[in-house]
Image (cartoon, rainbow, N blue to C red):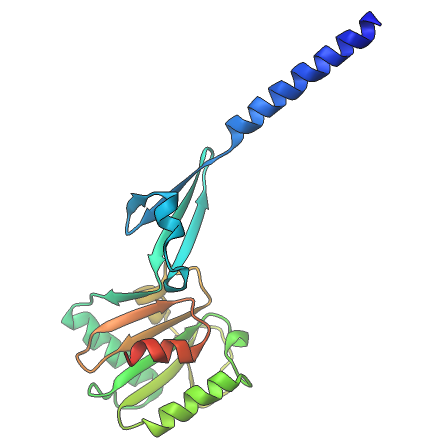
Length: 199
C-alpha cells in the first residue's frame, strides 16, 4: 500500500513538473507591422488579404513580420532608366513610358497559369486596352522559355532589384504613367493584380 502511494505521489509530481515545463516552453509571439511592434488584438483586426506574413522562429520567441502585399518602390532616375533598358534589351521592344506596365515574375515556370479562365480574361482585357497597357512575363534564369511572350531574367536583374527578400514564387511589378513603381508580393490571381493597378 505504501509503495503504491509513493508511486502515485511520484507520478503526480512528475505530471506537475512536466506541466510547468511545458508552460515555460510556450514561445511568446511578437507581431511586427512596418517594423513596429503591435498587439495580437491589433493583428487580428488586420485585413490579411492586403498583407503577407513572414514568420521566423527563435529559441524563445516567434516573430510574425506583417508586410503590405503592395508597396511603392523608391528608385532613383538612374535605377529606373537601367530597369527600362533591361526591359527593352530582354524583350527586343521599345519600352513605352506613357503606357501602364505590368510585369509578372515567376520563379517557377510551372506556376504560370495556362488554362485558367482568369488568365484568359486578363489577356483579353490587355488586348482590348493595349493602347494604354503593356504586359510582360519574366522567369528566373535557367528556366526554359517555351512561349513568345515569356522572357528570362538572365542576370537575376529583377530578382535582385525587387524581390530578393520575397518568400513567394510569384511576384509582380506595376509601373504607372508617372513612372511610379509598385511591387505586389505573392498574388496568384492576375486579375487581382490588374484590379489593384487600375484603381
